[in-house]
Image (cartoon, rainbow over all chains, first blue to last red; front, side, top):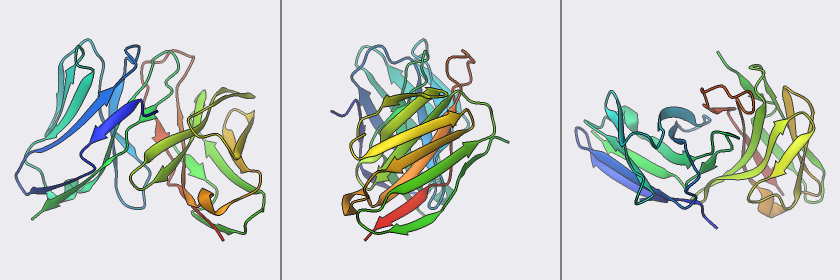
Length: 112
Length: 116
């Protein structure tokens, strides 16, 4: 049973374009929603995270949009750059335990 | 800097062998995790430990066990390795019951295990 569903599986974007990755969750008790970025040969690293008391969080070119009623959240990468090419994972957890449940990942390729 | 260190980057084992994957963190984190990463399946939680000697099964615990005798060390054990356990294994750590708001999980670089 996939508790966090992520789409698309892969994405190709032109340099300067907007990359959008979507996630949906099932457990309404989740209260922490991070995105992780993974480069080849490396472990994932935290990119940006949001809690359900806000609908949007922006850090530089990266924005999370959160829709609590739809149980969905998405990552937007503005002005995508070739250096953004990586695998992106959404995740969800309960703050009480910090036990992270991940989505299936999106392989992003930004073409120059 | 937080450091999560996995003992091996690459490992090749034979079917039926008992395999130990070791992970050490230096942040005094309560939580430690073992994930398995496979193409198209993302990061699947094998086991989660929220304290010394405490563990909780994840989504795919079959064929695996874990040991956490010290807070900084979390071991994943493949009791009898099989070819379908060929994968990338990632260890992570984070704050847990101490209630710290920084909930970031820090990952090791992974161990690519091949079972032949």
